[in-house]
Length: 153
Length: 147
Image (tube, each protein chain N blue to C red):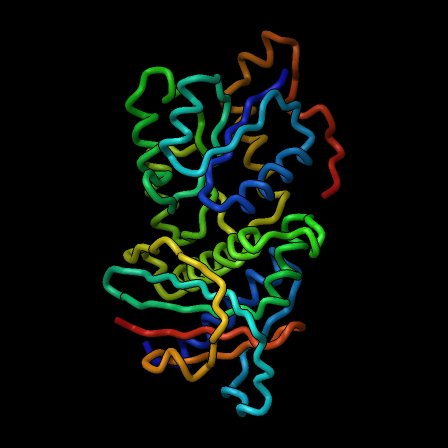
């Protein structure tokens, strides 16, 4: 499966999850934006997940903290100022899980692959250039770019 | 009649959202308990009566499929319907769940109405006799629920 198809399916999966569960539109950009438009935040929620089987890949999601806070507040019903880091991390870990699950349902309708268990943490040093051996995707949101890195294995 | 429901998911926020949705379904609830994996669910079911289990599949320590298999191997627990709520969305995965004895399958992301509809269908099917004996026609005490 070529990278363009993967990007198209990932865009559909992310839009479906963010739209249905979080009422927050996201859209894949055709190209990675130039560096001066990145507007990187100090903190990102990193969520890593893999799937295994006839097709195998690892994915890393980087959600800007403001996006994570907004989504976690809406999802849990807890005031933004009262949210703990754990609640934000857990919400975005589940978001990555649902996006990858939906994506896998599209590229593997016969269900031969198995989804791994996602892990998430807050990172302070994210740069889109860092996961160097992964293919990057950038999605727009009302709270900055959401980054997804895909690496077939 | 009131139903005891157990929500099993390794995500605390997802458990909270599912519980909130169940609370809004209009079903007369007894207890609404939660567990972070299959082992915790079995511990709860060893101590309390549960009428229906809503379970994720992909969880650490003991996932939903293993939980269902364990329940199916127990004379008492196998009578409790289990509904999967999972990110795994392929038809073959849903077919496999049905073969194993799952009472229903809800894909994440879900709409609250989907949880309500499947929950009502499963409760009506599994507990029709008990409801009739208790003079109750439906699991819901409020038919006009608006999400």
